[in-house]
Length: 294
Image (cartoon, rainbow, N blue to C red; front, top):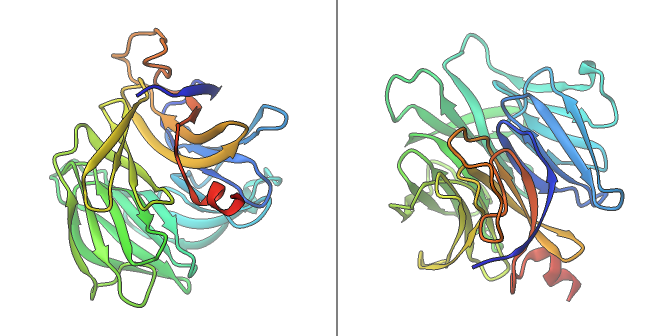
């Protein structure tokens, strides 16, 4: 399936964590390798970026210029209008650990930040983990992961999904009274043997799970029952994440990473090269953004 698209930024090493700031309408993402945060204004078509002294692996909007972020081994707030490193206010920092870094995360409506990690030791497979940051405390869940990646909460707040990129699968938690996973919640495999490695994800207004497939150059949509419904060819081999947005006719923001093996060619079938960030118009996509407006 093809979609209309618009490239808004290029030259990224590892673009990730896209989103829309609902307080000001700007779009945002990060470059993990470059420790940079980016904001894009649809009105001016301008991109702003700033270097983050603590690193940045994921980000969530708390206000028009205030963001919650994970650094390499820290959780902090910052003001995008203040470029001084002193504006990065640490909420939690690891001490004495250097064999992992934070990877993806999701900010739940309750205020809980669910975080995933990546193992940097290269020792084995099952060394990543996920945790819940709440009330200034970080608690780890005893669930073995190869690489804890994209996360999403369904609209009814009854199911929580998380990609395990190394295993090529997505896990699902059946939630109890909270909108984040706990040790008491049942966890199982939602879908496995995904082509490429499942990375970032989003859930549309029908409860379908959209997944960025790293290494496969596409977005794949699964039903709540795990049935594959459709795919969008992105073209960049290393497609890292997606976010549902609202920018003119475009409804999806896609991030990618640089791949030295990709041919430096664009076509209508493969619109993005690695290292670019683009807006897509996906037909018949219903999200919480346009449902509220209908």
